[in-house]
Length: 356
Image (spheres, one colour):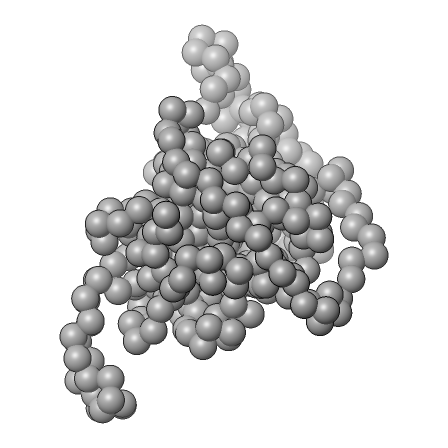
């Protein structure tokens, strides 16, 4: 039975592997759904995806609408859009809210769906909420009225210095994409039960105007900042490129499976590839531990890592902005502090283990 009133997440999978952003979105959807008194649906699209459908239920979805077709093995815009439209046609009416990740795929697919449905879309959100709105009609007298339980899509604006709350209550669905790493997934529960609904799709010839000839994924060069539990980042305060070897990587070596991050200024200086960048124009992260070496903590960097569970900052400038939101701050020469930090962590791990 179709659940037309559920908050909906478009799941993202890559070669049958559900991406972390999907479970973050389901976590946000559960929060919104609780306020609305409804459930959470997930749309799963791809080829040979039956084995992962149940994982969405375990991750918090109440039901999963699945379009499984060999022609959907590789992502291309129009076939995936057609699959979403097939699900909406099967359900009978759009859900109140559709969420997608602000990923390469989500940023491409979401506007195509929104344009077809002639509805609004707020991109790159860092917060989502439910609230009311009273429109007095100065801009559009035809839309006067009070709107209850609508989506508050919140995103940074004016160079991340302000938050904009964007509303679109006049038509369903209200759509938003959310940054990776800013929403919190709910704990996986393998005992959860839910319905998996298979939806057929009929493609049209023009859906395949774009063809994927070859896909090359070089995993050896991948930098998985968004799923890292520990990130050690370096900034322009390192002074030289070699600081990433002598300080950042040296400290990171203490932690199993840690990842190297950086500020934008270090990337712009050519000291480290852009794939390591944390911040507004880089990755948004939420590790258990974030260590910032020689990073001032400007707003551009802060928005990408301020949700970290524990932040340790080392900077020789006592007035550096990062000390305003770091949980622990050390004022001093990072090249003198790092060996002491490394020694302290190693001693701690000897007695308590290396879990972070």
